[in-house]
Length: 222
Image (tube, rainbow, N blue to C red; front, side):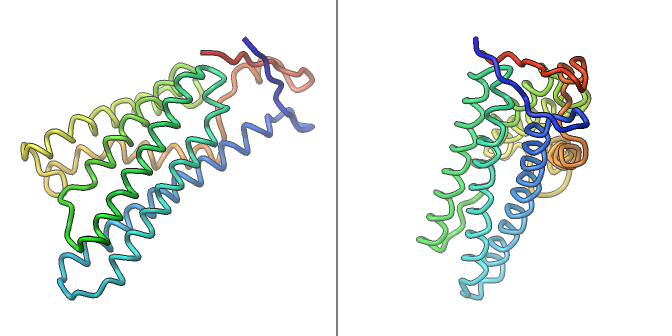
């Protein structure tokens, strides 16, 4: 077991954790925006049938930026999550890297074939859902965010993973109608979490208990 010391300003705020929280929050919002706009451009290219590749290239580029952003989230959170479980921190980073590779592979396919990979989002959501479950579990276990928000993540990503086979087997249409409700819990989590992180940062019970004049020590281990 190793120990690390947090850096605190004159008000007793853990500045390292605060900076990480803001970075993660910004990357979450950026990744969500680039994926949604990129997906809209890709769908527009195939739905209009004009043959103009500009929207397709732009859509793939935006989704590539999304892939890089999610890897950035994994890297930024590795130390924070590793304070509570190095194994889960590594698992989260690996899942995010696989998500990035899936996005990249889909982009290469779309540009090379100029044909739509039906329900390609489900491949991406598979890794996103796994990563989300890992993240939500650690957030709940470590009380880094309000308990209700961590549970929202667990429920949301669990529903998302259940939606994938339902979509692939045509049991439910996830892009329209009632099927879209399966995206709501996870979508709310990915909207509320980054806003909370940017505005307030992570909960740090050990830091608050230590007080502004003491240097808290956080255990790191699996």
